Image (cartoon, rainbow, N blue to C red; front, side):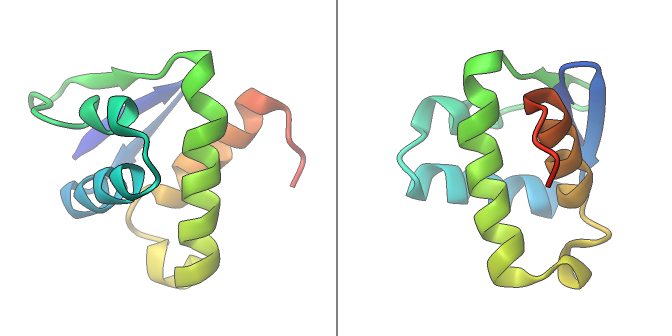
Length: 92
């Protein structure tokens, strides 16, 4: 499990979802953000800064849109999306 803190919210992603997210971030040209997911120690929390929130949400929204919520329901990606939306004040 990988924990990601968005503001005051913490989402827990499965290891597989974290690896897939890292690949999607690389494909989107967000290497510095992707690097935050590399070599994360067990139990560590990745703390996002405000500048990372919108680009990460865009990648997550595209992923959910292409894959579907049902396929991602147990991965932690939907929880991450909700935390990012909350931080940005987006009322999707």
